[in-house]
Length: 360
Image 1 (tube, helix red, strand yellow):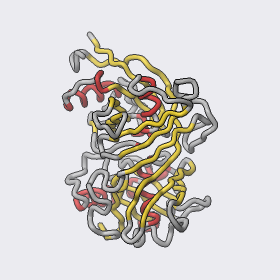
Image 2 (cartoon, rainbow, N blue to C red):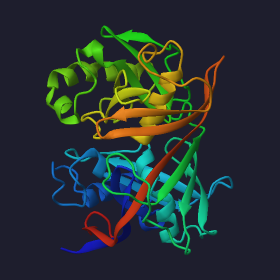
Image 3 (cartoon, rainbow, N blue to C red):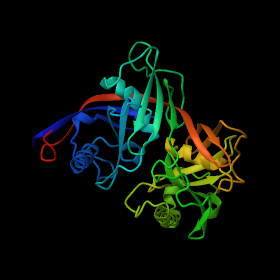
Image 4 (cartoon, rainbow, N blue to C red):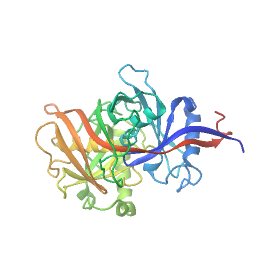
């Protein structure tokens, strides 16, 4: 059977991984693009056996890069969340972990040129409109991957990639508080529906009879919890103006509990059909914002430092992730959020799809 080869970089970005493509190497038509990505990843099988996916939601992510048409950005980053067991692609969210690899990938692809020992890139996250400044180590004119930075959920150390997010409030829904409420009740559970970098529905773990310190595997085995959580998420999605979200990975869902290792809060983040083994970068920004929002479900259990900017560490199943949050009170608003991630180029070459899907 004839096949079509598509150039790609295979990268780990933060605690996620997947193929990074140049936009010019992919079909422009959205339906054809989705079909190509489904075949490349191998969606529709729990192991993604006929593609390069990894069988989990954090290893079936795709980054599509191009030179930005916007004078205020260097690179456009378009994200695709390919499903694991379903043959679907969701373009509504973005991914901050995969974004950690965008700077190195853009340099590897020649979309931008290095500018010294560090290269500062302005990235436009197309899906949500967020603006991100990424600082990549380029001491010899190439992305550096070795270094001393360590992030929870990834073994060893690597070169740091600094990310600073702006324009994150109302990233998907157009409003930081899309329901107009700081705290409301859905199906007998108090929730805060917040849209900062990612729309997230947050509730207290104790309200589900949980400690909030359960492992991701323990939560995934607790189908009674998912049976209670999913209807709440869908109703919240409607209230947030997102329509029917039954087939979408957004809004995400998170449960919060008091910190136990010196952080600001303990969180478990759902994607939403499985618990994240660590923490999403975008989700961490939203949870951190909830921790300092007066009247939210985090009030009384989060230990947030006083004053702004403040570094808030979100404790998660793999460790912790720190968010430098710059915000205002009266009225509450988020100016920017900063994080440090790492990335590594794992492989490069061509991924093949049947020519019957796309001839290139």
